[in-house]
Length: 116
Image 1: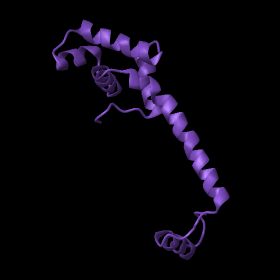
Image 2: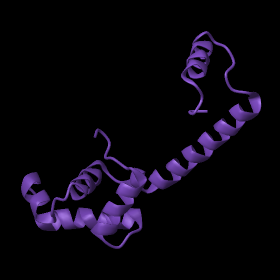
Image 3: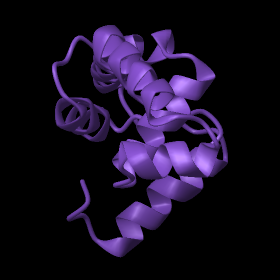
Image 4: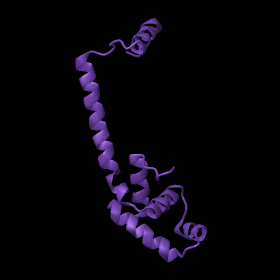
């Protein structure tokens, strides 16, 4: 445990570094199972974001950063109508009803646009 004396922790680290066994079989299986459950939950939570195109992911990333549709359009040299269409596609793919919900969903799941 983390509360163990430093010498015990150091001994465990050194044992692991030498290839020794530091976790019993039952605890190892429990940890692996917990990791697999966490990984599955992460995969499920991020599944809707994988449906976004690269441009939609960029727009969502800009919305997360607090940019307005108007500022996104101006910076991208496209019309506001184009950005609004991209935002509607984002909302549809994420299954939400507003930009705020999309931003909250992305933030809650820890999503980041590819390349960020």
